[in-house]
Length: 133
Image (cartoon, rainbow, N blue to C red):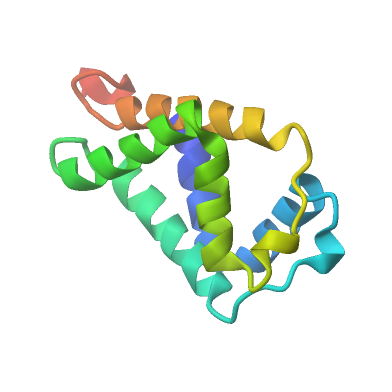
C-alpha cells in the first residue's frame, strides 16, 4: 500500500511539480512568502518523482544502486533530518538561509525516512506484496 502511495506521489510530482512545491512551502515554512525558487526547482522536483517511481516499480535487485542511495537518504532523514532538509533547500531556493522551518518539519522528515524504508522494502518481490506472483 505505501509503495503505491509513493508511486502515485512520484507520478503527480513528475506531471505537476508546482502544486507539490507550493504545499511544501505553505505547510513546512513559517514564512513561505519569503521563498524564492531557483529556475530549475520544477525540473529537480520532476527528477525526484522519476527517481521515486523508477525505484519503486522495479525490484531492489534490479535497481540496487538507486535503492542504496535512497536508503542512505532515508537513514539520514531518520537520524539527522535538518542537514538533509537544508541541503535540499540549497538546490531549491535562492535564499535558503532566510527560510524558517515549522517545528514539526524535522519529526515529519524522520517519519518520511521510515516510510521510505518501508517503500523500498516493499519494492522487492521476495519481501514485498508481489512475492505471491
